[in-house]
Image (cartoon, rainbow, N blue to C red; front, side, top):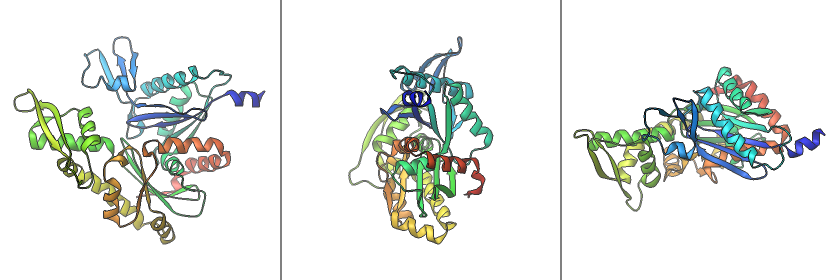
Length: 351
């Protein structure tokens, strides 16, 4: 009976990111890829919309509706809203599953170095959403597996995961993290850099959604062969009226330069305290970059020019972590070893 239930229960992998939530099942692959945003009616405390529909409401809502981003820097900041969001998506997955005999098992990625209280908040939020069993693994490990790295070997791997709220840099060997660093400079910070640069140069205030669109379409870390331009609209800070301006990729590159330099300098600082044997492995394999922020045009070239080590962009970098988490359902031994490391994470070194 146990084996029968296990056959028809679901294994769900979750990447609970600051900007996006992704969910993966073994049978269907990635079936949820939506913004980590919830719109709630203040009067009734009921969810109005979640994900893409909620994101459309940002900056366009009446007073009785609030749009909430329940995760800050990859950490649960609003437990109740996170629980509601997870329950909404898990129930949506379960409704598409023809036979639901038992509750699902879940692997969820967590930022490296979070406290026991923060781990408990994530675990409780997932369990409250109707899950049978939850496993917490650190995101750099998941990202490394998703990038196809053989982390079980005695060989150094350097992974740089640029998400929405945080950038995580980690040296991994023998299924564990040797050195690591976590930064609050990531995709959302890039958006703020663009907003501030446009404000300083044009006295125009852009919305977050528009700034993100600018970053995706014409943002770059290095000079481009062909100039890109984009018309954007915002509020003139002098007149208070709408105003349209033209931005180009060079302006956006200059706006992002300081944040990108912080990431490059942090990678250098990690390498400086890494054992030479592992550094030699990293030089041979290259630095692996992933996450949505790694999609910025020329990002790998920027890191390569700053550190003089080959840089490799992982296949489908946005889904790297979620694909890596799903691998562990097929390897219970590795999952057990990684779980042991998570429960004893102080042995790793942060700088």
